[in-house]
Length: 139
Image (cartoon, rainbow, N blue to C red; front, side, top):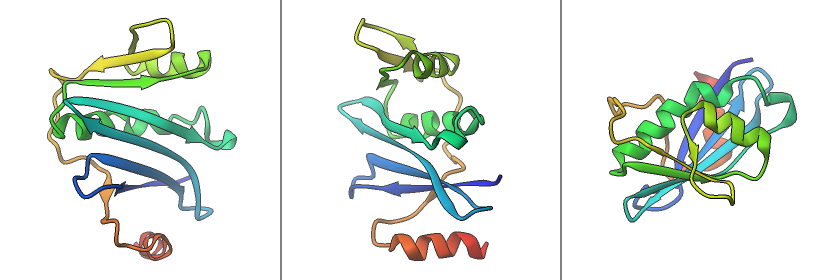
């Protein structure tokens, strides 16, 4: 299994990001993670992996890059909301802490060492997703 990550800004300001995870062995999307920055606060939302790709440490491979990417957008705190105990324990391993009883978690990234050259491929919104996938498989 070889996973490639595509980082697609969803707005012109590049403050709303969609990460798409592709298994290049089978040439299929296997998961995604969306995050955004507004008012000096980062938010990770809508993270999902297909069942066969859960517990494979895919997010643990990329979470530092995601947190650094968010920090480089100018924020110190990153929040997320999780509904399941399984997801809660996963995010807790990354350093997130629950701050209310509704399942909301956050992490302080102000002292995180980042070189801001994240290993996330970035493409503009104008690229057709089919062409994007073809481009990945030519590498």
